[in-house]
Amino acid sequence: MAEDNTVYIGRKETMAYVLAVVTLFNQGTKTVVIKARGRAISKAVDVAEISRRRFIEKAKITKIETDTEKIEEKDNDRTVNVSSIEITLEIEE
Image (cartoon, rainbow, N blue to C red; front, top):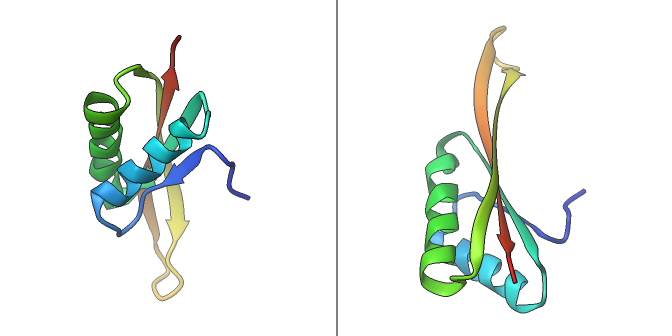
């Protein structure tokens, strides 16, 4: 189940996710978590940086967590490592 303050990064344009982050902050959310896996990790970093540098200058990155999951491919009998990142932005007042 998705939390109300979480933005999951996928295949959309970067600015679509920036808009989601900015919208959450404008609705009164004090903390937004940006999550991504695999190739979307670099886009998650871009979203966090664009959001806080251009739009919500009060926002600070308070936590960055990385992880690696082992995922078994169904077609092949092998295991693949998939990295993930979780970036927490908070507005400090």
